[in-house]
Image (tube, rainbow, N blue to C red):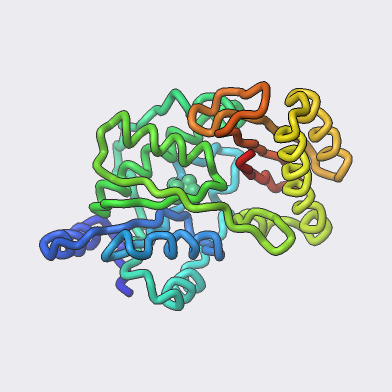
Length: 277
Ligand code: PAF
């Protein structure tokens, strides 16, 4: 497993692979890897000849009040986990991604509007810009993203279509702890008492999904769910909504391609989750 520390080392490697006719799959991450990330590598099995995991904490997707400085950087543990999978051919670990004077960014609209953007207006501009740069720098033929960050996945799909990028996008299902909590690097910030509360979100999402499938009025079901979330000890709700999974447009009654999207604060942690309904 090679460690490539800048775009020149990465380019030298992908040029060799391309010359050999190999298909490159990438797993973009910000590090602090957990089983959710490792499942992304698994999902590339049989779809890529070489797998590159990228690790870069992207300043452009953090607002000044967010956790960029304290975001867990656990390179040695990450390397060990990746080595253990036996599936990762290289780690792309650039120190810098923005040269002095960098001034070009991607501003996604469409599926980027609403939800996360209402609360983190800077976020998708940062994500789209770094993901585009990672595609370019790694020579990716296929890239895999987790469905947990569902709006992010849709924004990336839209960027690929809109900008005619020749990278296939693969979605990988949300991986959960045994109690249902969606895996996330930020779960590590939860205090023990909060960690007990956190899985209740998924329970409430499942109950809500059952009620929507059963034909109950969506608005009523969602507002009851929000009351239950707050009564369970969560701090505030950014959103808890039901939408069309392709367009992210609000859905007022059960639809074939429906999805619940949630972003909920618990202490200092903002949990996000999704569930197909
Ligand atoms: O989902 C993430 O970890 C990040 O948003 C990504 C896609 C690696 C871009 O920095």
